[in-house]
Amino acid sequence: MPCRPVELSAAHMDDRSVSRSGRFDGRAYVTYTSGSTGEPKGVVCTHEGVMAYLSAMIEEFALGEDDQVLSMMSVAFDPSVRDIFGTLIAGATIVMASSREIFDPAALADLIEHERVTSCLSIVPRALETLIEELESRPRCMDMRQVVSCGDVLSGPIARRAREAFDCEVINQYGPTECTMAATFHRVVASDLAASCVPIGTEIGGAIVRVLDRRRDQVPVGAVGELAIGGAGLAQGYLGRPDLTAERFVPDPWNEGGRLYLTGDLGRRRGDGLLEFVGRIDDQAPGSRADPRAVAAALRADAAAKDVEVAPLPDGAGGFRLVAFVVPFGTVDDPVARTKVQEVLRRFTINSQILMIERMPLTPNGKVDRRALLDLHRSSLQGPR
Image (cartoon, rainbow, N blue to C red; front, side):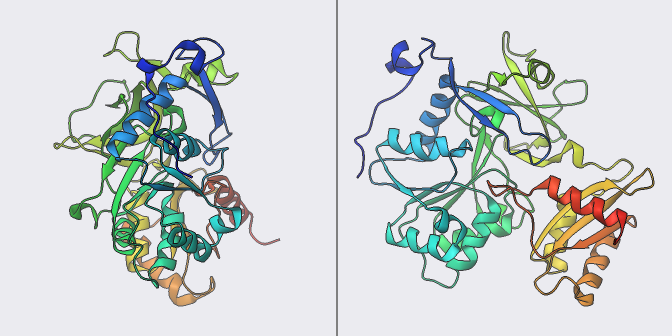
């Protein structure tokens, strides 16, 4: 049953309603990072950060009591806060997907159609692509009005297919766990549909995003630098890790008393003000100018790969090579598919390796499991046993 809308903001709360500590900026919850790029860390988020984002999201996405919002994220991950509490505050109805429906595209599509879902606020691009493949054989879901991608890079082709399958608005969100669900958002437009990476857009919920060079100075418009995020949604830090907190959460010299989280992500701000995600700092191979995202996009388009992940990894001889983990549409030992992959890689670099795999390993929240890929790569260096 729908809930009656609740007016909830910092101005309408007294201390007792938000925190046993009696502080609006006190701890709301601790959620752990996925660990896809290292050891999982407990991120301490505040009531202030949660409400700053949820209030802005409800307004920007026009959530209300007529909406049926799909919830398919585990409560172990921070998007569940958006799906559950954002929906309840807006007075909308939550449509909870079961474990079976989450992992069965046909069952999930049935749920969306039967419950007349209007909003999907949290879906990672790979899960979205799988759902699209199911929906493309069905009539359009005419009740769906918005699909929000989060948690990973959204490509233009996936956004285009989502718009066609749902006949609705597609929104791209960006924000590490350390920034309370999301720091930026972007409504996909026609000019985005051919891009390898849809823009991550503009700030939301009082977030501040700066693009910094190695000296932590702001770079000019159009230049690439590390994305650093501050503002209302910034987490307190890492639970029980003051050393790591001090390393990643640094003072904001342009905002007295403010802090910035150093994301490790590379990006640029365009002349029109939109932010673009460029890649990870640790994805840049020493001595190589090959962009892993561009290589992956070319493999999808020109080698007809079903799924691809590209990363610079040690070559076993003290250097690095570009490693392409490729899920082909056919079998992993198809020589024609391998030849096509080789031809694409030669356009970018001569120092490369191909690992054909049956399926892309994913973490429980749908991101690529980079540690599993690293294990596959290490096994390939050791050779058959």
